[in-house]
Amino acid sequence: MAEPVMSDALLAVEQRPAGGAALDQVIGMSVAAAVVFAALVWIAWAHRTRRITWLARLSDRAEQRMGRPGWVAVPGALLAIALLTAFLGFIWDVSLHAGVGRDEGPLANPAHYLILVGLFLTFVAGATAMVLPLDEVPGPAAVKITRAWRVPVGGILVAGAGLYALIGFPLDDVWHRIFGQDVTLWGPTHIMLIGGAGLSLIGSLTLLREGDLARGRTTAPLRELRVRISYTAAFGGLLVGLSVFQVEYDFGIQQFRQPLHPMMIAAAAGLALVAARRVLGAWGAILAVLFYLAVRIGTAVIVGPVLGEAYNVFPLYLGTAVVVELLALIAPLYRRRLLFGAVAGLGLSTLGLVLEGLWVQAAFVLPWARDMWVEGLLMSVPVGVLAGMTGALFGTALTTGALPSKAVCRTVVVAGVVALAVSLGNGLYATVPDAGATVALSDVDSDPATRTVEARVTFDPADLPSDDPTWVQITAWQGGGEGVVVDRLRETAPGVWETTRPIPVHGTWKTLIRVSDDRTLAAVPVFMPADEAIGAEELTAPATFTRAFVPETSILQREKNADHPTWLWNVACSVVAICSLLLLWALAWGAARVARATPQASVTDHPTGDRPPALV
Image 1 (cartoon, helix red, strand yellow):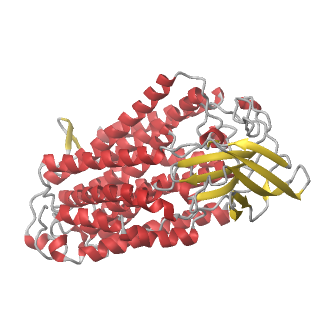
Image 2 (cartoon, helix red, strand yellow):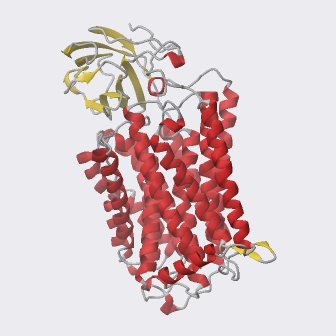
Image 3 (cartoon, one colour):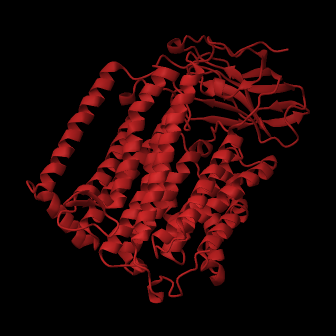
């Protein structure tokens, strides 16, 4: 019925490295990192031994201006610069890969410099918080390092998250050398890079709380405008960090099934917005979302219209924030923290997602289809409920500190991680039908150097996509900086689908037909250029051809190297998973340590003026 097309000699891009970086670049980056790290260690030693005084003066000046301890104000400013820089670099990097393809090397991509600087400054921000305190104990939860040196928990968490992300950078090169280039946001080492940066905001919020406790504040730190702004920015930043995992959907080049998208939105909103409402009080969730939108819109404008790369849209989170705010108005519910977190998680993972879906339908390249909703809600609701409960616990840790028992806290957090893992496993499971497609191409531009076509696709069997498939579309990307083309095909007869715009099939474009329907996630290649780096020949696009469906990743991630034992891949992924779980454990430990060091609040200390909320 269909010719086999997915072989080792298939599908390519222009002649760029398909493995790790060139050795001279590796050596250069290693030497530069060693020199900078040595200089920072010397500065830390000189400050701790009082051989230099400028760092202490900087801390004192920041404390006077910000009204917070210097070991909170200075690292906070550094972290803000670091994460904004890294996020801009990350979105730019995704746009470059979508439009251009692989890098000629890590130092040939300008976005990588921003990412690397941002991640390094994240680690430096945490280390600065640990180094700065000289003649004071940085809060009641401080960790003893030596007899005279105690460090804030938040500093440890930010430095640890930054180090986790930084380790991902060299590991990413090692990963590519062994397994080839997995061109996806969700590559294991990519998860380390973006996860460490995003989760550092939990450490930042913990550090802010330690600064409040060190100044004698208990549960009402938000009456000062500059303090309130700090918390708002941190919660908005946390929402930005958690939204990064959805970026492939933002660009319309997702390599995963659609039900994962609403689940990830529910998880991010449940944790960040419930916690923001608990800490900031009325309008807290909406204020966090407004900061998130300012960052996302600003970055999208810089990368898209200013730099001229592929544009992206993103979830608004306004619907989920409104649901959280409305439920918080029910005083008996709001005072019962875990119950409020659960109900808020349920509300934002149902009504909130419906409201979010209106925006996705209007603005996203691939909107949510009706056939996605049942499975999407089955995944989103348990994750949203447990994320909301975790957000309620985190918000409690940052206010009254009156957490429930350790057993209850562990149960909520572990159940949330398990629910997230199960939902991810379900969402990542996809099937490929024993089917094919006959494609008839009509030239719009017949010049081989600029050829574009219109396509008529006939599926065999004809009922392959259901009456309401998630998507049937053609994607063309990595065409040399010309952006991404995604065309949602229209059905003109049973089993027959046609394009609505010209599709490029020349140069370095990679063009494929993609079908997602229930658990089906499969593709048919249309045109792929030659790629000497991976030994791939050109796959031409003749006027008529018939080809079989194959897994999407065999096309979209064709630079991956299958020439390695399965156990090595499993071990490598397991190591990354264990490191990720250790980071989550450290963040939970840090938040709980600060909470349990918080003096119990009085009735008047509560930011809303009512009684301290009940635990459950």
